[in-house]
Image 1: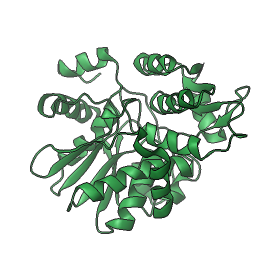
Image 2: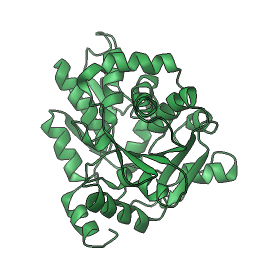
Image 3: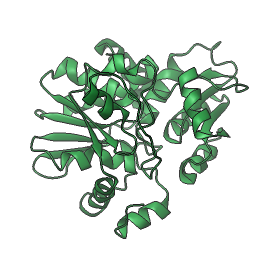
Image 4: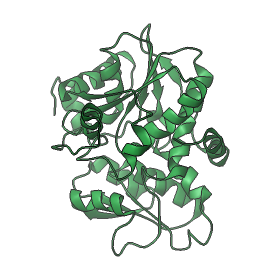
Length: 307
């Protein structure tokens, strides 16, 4: 759990350089927190700015490095460009081209690796031969505190809700938001959403202990994975009330509903929370975490397919 005062300090660090994203009604019991409207199309700008601005000049002397499939890469690239320092991104070679193109437009260098090497870079907090201050996309308290500013905004902007539904990627978004909400609204339930093909948290909570998962890649590229990152189980098993593994067809349907009814383009990870909330009865806030998705995928989804 991240201390509430750390989250408030993160909000001071990032200031007005992130958007206080709108909280809009989807229907009579579901609200959408539209992090897809951030300047980089994802919540990751919050954590990246928080971590890099918390670092010392000596730590940033050789630039910054992250391991990311796209969204954290854009956040780190944005923050590095602002400071005029070098940014490099260790990314899986099969990451969506739309995300990698955006990273390069922001001036960062992409270092393509295999999926296993990318995952190992997150486990090891770095990649051989790639020098610089490593900004972990998940397991960094300054990053998680930055993510927690979303939770501060939720409780300030909405007087009453029963649950917050959060897409689970590595756990940094959930840890940050849940820490803020638990401190300020302890009765609110924290529910996570993972694609059923990459749902290690749901499997671990069901087992009562950390466990691996038979991972299969899918169009929901920004969520889930083959296992929990080291140390994450200890952080979240007391914070998360429920973890849901979402069928891919339900994710695609949620993407269609967001486009048709809320006029929002969300990537698969960004639609996970709505897919879960639609099958629940309580008042839910859904974190629409990002909207960086290849147009070819959007076209297939809107045509009724599950890519």
